[in-house]
Amino acid sequence: MRLSTFVASEHAKPRERIENICGVLVHVRPDLRQEIHTALTGISGVEVHTMTDDGRMVVTVEDAGGVWAGAKITSFNDIRGVLNVALVYHHFDSDLEGETAS
Image 1 (spheres, rainbow, N blue to C red):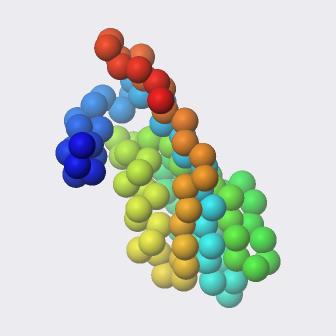
Image 2 (cartoon, helix red, strand yellow):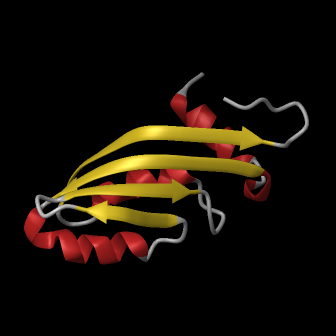
């Protein structure tokens, strides 16, 4: 399946019936870490759990506010000072009829 087709099908599903949780490692410029922390925590469904002095952040992202978690993670790269974003954990569960967890 093409990625764009998958993304379109995921966006079409009712978000309130899907549990989608992602664990992300975000590497940022150390001198901008406070500014980036503020930007990330301002996004609905995003929580920064820890931040190191050298610019690494452990972040969880959930579907919230009608926005798919994957779209939020992708948008992290648009924040000034973000160097790298890596998905390290993903949990998906759906109670939709005919859906299976992966």
